[in-house]
Length: 182
Image (tube, rainbow, N blue to C red):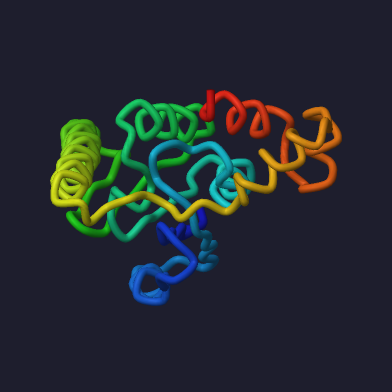
């Protein structure tokens, strides 16, 4: 029976060191880390490796539930996978252990709260962007393609494929620029 830890930060600019320290203090022999969004489990190779490696009686620990994921379905599917292997999940804060029935109930409730929190964050972000656009402050990402160059090359009789190759952009982008000017 071994205890493994998993730490995740949403972006490379954020650190997992506090999570790693807490997991080691909690008795995790091996702690795997990665960066990436918690919306889904896709693309999280370290988590997949840990789950593959777990055996009956082992425990997967995370510092907080949202480090594991913000999708209720993903978290519950992960717990099911662990159950099928005879392993369990332990969340350090708040203390949740899926090897106990009350731990499963709390985990289900908290994973729904984490998913709701993600929805609220996205709504606030959309509202903030809309307000900034209304004030004329938010204009989106600066354009990276010289639209005039596309138009000039088209005026010289070049086709979309040739323009795309010369400028290192996709044909769809060329067509989009040409359609915007009509």
